[in-house]
Image (cartoon, rainbow, N blue to C red):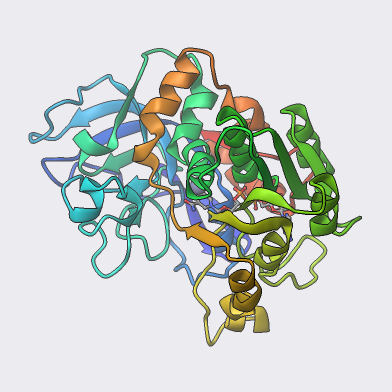
Length: 378
Ligand code: NAD
Ligand code: ZN
């Protein structure tokens, strides 16, 4: 089968790989209809994770069940399903508590598993014609058959629940003010989720004009950090206090498009932008410091966080991979009932063969390339 394979930094190719197949009785095999490119793929694509060449990318997957293992009870051939990016067992301590991003079974020695991701277990990605789904009864979310809402439903694999998770980590309540750093797909989904939860005002910080326009379109106040002091602006809009809650949807970015160094300072700006005793939800991904890393920032990445200021303001913070399964059913039903249309972030839907080009555009943050969906089989 054909799949998107990582070659070296800034290079992926669509190549023939061994067919995905059922390996355990609890697996199903899914014929992929949509697999999205994610900002998380860019950490590997840009070479900051030490990913081995040959990895098949793709953790945001949906499709139609092609074959069912003998131990699967509820999923049938022909079902239309979307899978959380987390691979989870459903029966360990963390899964039983709803913390499926930190499954203790699927990826020994690490916290949680995922498809197509370095250090997240032996699970091949779904930017391919077929995908093996382990513990299928637990990991498949059923969707209405047909082709309706394909783009909206595909976002249930990761970014819609992840944006929602950010608001859950920050415990966004009705009437509160929220600032979101990053107007990438995840930040936009966090801003959208904050509004679904009744936030009175949402500020979105980025410097990409097309992404800031999208933020404005959903009713947020855009703030361009390349033109102004973002924390200062946010304080000005909130009687000098800062917002009640804050979200980091940027994470560690080793480089920005101009090539200049961009260390992990967004967290410190976030601390400045939120009022004392406020709460932060951090879903932007921070890769552990790599002593042999390519840049000084990579070597010291997480040490740049000003814990003193964080303490002084009495802030609280939640972090980590989203527990997609905790929200995907409810968010699916909001899509079905017409209460949510997350697909507004989707800018491109292209055949698998165009993946190398799509990666380049998305990585460069080229104008209008907000969220790219790959459609194998087209
Ligand atoms: P993206 O790279 O498309 O978006 C990041 C955005 O941040 C870009 O628009 C960029 O211009 C902006 N940015 C860069 N530096 C900034 C700064 N200093 N201030 C404000 N904005 C800044 O990626 P994405 O798909 O939106 O993902 C965002 C982050 O979320 C990534 O780190 C990704 O790995 C992470 N992520 C985490 C989870 C999770 O479960 N926790 C899931 C999905 C993605
Ligand atoms: Zn993702």
